[in-house]
Amino acid sequence: MGFRARVFAIVTLVTLVAIATTAWLTVRTTTAEFTDSAAAAARDVDTIEADLVRYGSVHGTWEGVPHLAEELKGRTRQRIRLAGLSGDVIVDTDTLEGRTARPTTSRPASVLDPRRELVAGAFAMPASGRRTDTPPGAFSSDPPAKSNDPSADPSAVVLDPSRRPGDSPVSVRIGPRALLARLSFYRSAIRLRACYTREGVQMRVRQPIIWSRNPAAAYVAGIDDDRPAKCAAQAKSTKAERAADHEAALACGAGRTEALGVQDPSLVPEETCEGRVFLQRLESVAPEPLLIWLGHSEPQRGAVRIPLFRVATAASVVAVLLAAGTLLLSRRVLAPIATLRVASGRLGAGDLSERVRVRGHDEIAALGRTFNRMADSLQRSEEAQRRMISDIAHELRTPLSTMRGYLEALQDGVLKPDQELLASLHEEAVLQQRLIDDLQDLALAESGALRMRLEPLDAVELLETYGFTHRVAAESRGVLLLVETAPVPPVNGDADRLRQVVGNLVTNALAATPPGGTITLRAGPADDDGVLISVADTGHGIGAEDLRNVFDRFWRADAARGRGTGGRGLGLSIAKGIVAAHGGTLSAESTTGAGSTFTVRLPPMPPPDRG
Image (cartoon, rainbow, N blue to C red):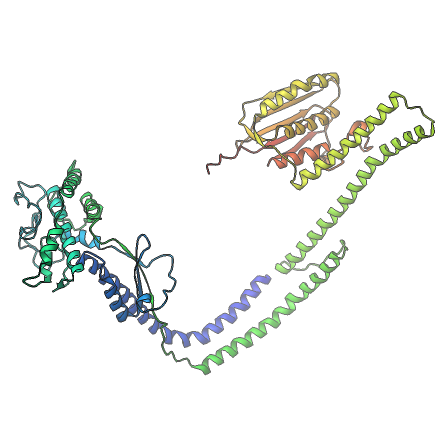
């Protein structure tokens, strides 16, 4: 069993015992109280939202709603905050109580929209008793419909004689004329109710605005009270409003195929054209939707009796089990960790040969193996660094010693400073400068700090240009330089750096290809919409053992490491670093006696930035 599994088993055992000893103490004392509290809170929320929506649909305005919010807060002990869609606060019971408003969540509890209740009432078919396709003439401030005959008006509502008063309303499909009647009725009713609220006219009964019912009947006004007449005059629809209503209603009637004036239990009014027109045309007069936030205005306090003796007993059992589990884990965990701590200290002090003994296959053993791999990697890196320093010293020692000997001979007068000698010294200095430049390029490429000027370029054009300019140099060595290309997409690259890569690969190919051989430069598309560039030669090839070292710094195919045949041993390392800086890869394939192929894979162009 793995270490993780053992820890999980012990923790599970402790957890099960703790749950078994404490669950029955808490479930019985909290479940009933929580259920009752959640049910009561849900009822409070439903009550608050229903009363507020009803207020908006009854009064046609949100004026006066702070009094209702304060009353609801007193009944439900819920803090109520109402704000418009623009963020303007309508009422906050915190400020009504004279305290600083507390922060609220970014998302409101709900959206209160009285318009949905209005549109549901406008499209509802009431119980049978009388026709409802036009409002009563006593209230309507607009011209009534010319006829109630269903055969004359295709938008008239046909009542179901089987329905009785008190039945739940069912939505009906209406036509343009019925829609016009409802728009005129509800606009006037909303304005009338809002005016009555502002003027302080006493409401006899909180009755919502219902199609075909006089909205003024819910109010009580004195004989000499002129406020109802004033409000009735302000409630009338304007000529422009009626014209806009007519145009919108006709637009819904165009192309209609459904039967009109028929009850439809599945009809959702606001999803119909008429319902959307109803909401849109009454948006300027109906109460705007409000955002509501709810929360307890005071901390909820309740007395929950907890059996302290039983809780203390359960806690003691859990503590004992945890202590036992800790003792069991310490022997298995702490000993290997202590060994790793000592080994890490020695490794940090410079002893890269330090390793730990690994036993088992659990997580601790995996940690030990990871430590050993890390130590191996550090030791290899240290050895590679020493080899690189030794290689650099080797590359510089011989030519510098030669230059020093010539300079001392010139200084002592043994040699005369003729033009040939000075040219030889200058050439040697240039070679050393190139070596230093190559080392700098390699360091920048490996560290990711190589400067690149990336731009879209054509790999085919790059190879053809290179082949044209270097074909004569290759032919001077008796080698044929060919270029084979296929249409490829553009890539994002630095043209100078990629030419440097191709140049390094061709230089190595020329060194490995005898007279009469061939070097072929190829460009073609890759599977991932990228580009493949390859340099293939017919030279002597590279052995399988040497192929894995071909990209190492200062590596040469010849064991003698002569610069006359092996170069400086940095070209392929630099080429691989440049390709990696482009996000690509450089790989090598070779067969002894048949030649080698080096392939550059460049990624596709990134998508254009639309930001």
